[in-house]
Image (tube, rainbow, N blue to C red):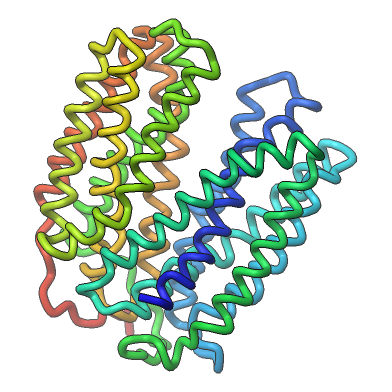
Length: 393
């Protein structure tokens, strides 16, 4: 598990970077743009890259063969460029240069994100992957918490400081991962990359399709809830902006604290059972949120909801890689991010339209309904024992 904690430092740096990016880049865009919709669109650039590039890069890394391994070359190329363009963002001189730095940073991130995550199942036996994913997500959650604590403090001193700190952290993370993880020695067992192109159609067996559908629906609920919750708190519950945003932190905090225990539960009782438990629990949390009348009950339910979300999120990625052959981890990582990114693109405007039509009270009814669809899809997932490599000829 030592190497998983070291790999988790890489995920820590990624999460730290995204949290700061999502928190502070809108301020830069607002200096040039008056349209909130346009700012929101520009902030989804990462999801479009994830939608189109990450499945390709994940698949490509499965077929890469170098003396550094399959995944490491993408980290060695992507992380330095990401660090450079991330550090340049606060030094933009116009809207054009700001968008240019944003696009280049997002493109660089897309190069190494799927290969970094695919390293986890590469170096971890199947029975330990839920625990390992818990560790990685715990580290990622810590990165997000630091982004809004220390990052906010540094931003108040000088706007460029948190961006430069993230750039330095990315480089340190690359050094740590590169020096401590040797793919051809640490992969259990190391599998020489398949030269024939992986057949996506064959890889998408029935259990994988149902699991991807479930992933789509629960990310529709979570992404929409997180994007619109602060507006819901202000308009439906009468909270201040700061109180509404602080309430959502209870959901994130309990998720981080539950990440490792959820992985342990998945290893002990099975990934599917723990995911279904989380879906049912989160369904009832969203349903009950329709009836809250006090800040205490709101935050209490969100605190419980973060635990159920950890049960789902921590076990879902190890589950999707377990449904395919070992040579396809990168491909399946790309598919996972394709579906979650598609949900991230579709969910906020869809739920926003429902709110425009029916009012803010529809928000948690819609998210509960999405979790119900996720449960139906998840219940149809059957494991594929002794999965054989699936390649096209």
